[in-house]
View 1 (tube, helix red, strand yellow):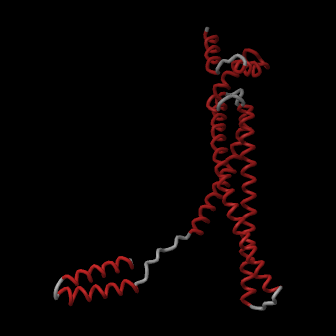
View 2 (tube, one colour; view 1 turned 90 degrees about the vertical axis):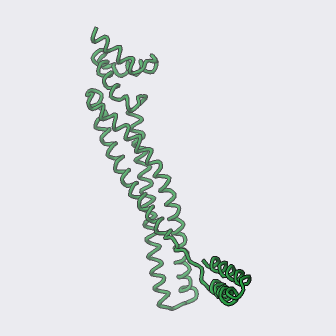
View 3 (tube, one colour; view 1 turned 45 degrees about the vertical axis):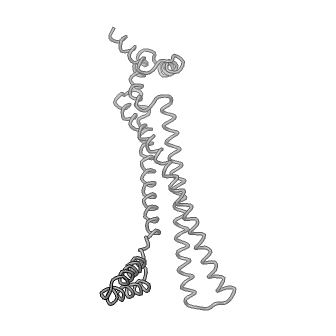
Length: 250
């Protein structure tokens, strides 16, 4: 703004020099006035964005997401444990179990992303806590080492100490949530991997159907034989299922 006004004044001044009478008596003085006004004019100040507030808002969003994902992973794990045994004998439950496995993969992936975000928040909190602890230490040194006696010093110490304690409590909460998030993710991933084995989530329902057919045909050794046919035999679930269907209808 300031620069634009000065340039406009210079333009009027130059124009006034080359235009007789009107320029000398009107444009030239006007140009000089505009130049002076531009020189003393204060620069426009852009409003400062509330960076701290935005950062705090994002941190709260991440913490809410972390808490939600922890609860969801706990619920999925419970449901998987309920369905894992029954899904081997009831096909309709196998489809529900397959959905649980897909959700488990999705939530563990999201949990990994949230771990990264929460780790960054913790690092910022550690820095903020370090600054607050240093500030409290400096104030207390003024009182203890130099014997400063002032009501303002006492007020400042109390205020800075309260802020430091709040930052410390927030950091402990964040670290606890990160630990719980990681533990729940690893637990769910282990549970899904153990129950899933070599079968993809979308094929759990088909696996249950084939296993039921194998149990009718081979009894207690059904699951072991099915896994052997899938790994050593090199056949896919679809191929085994089609063979068994043809045998049933033959």
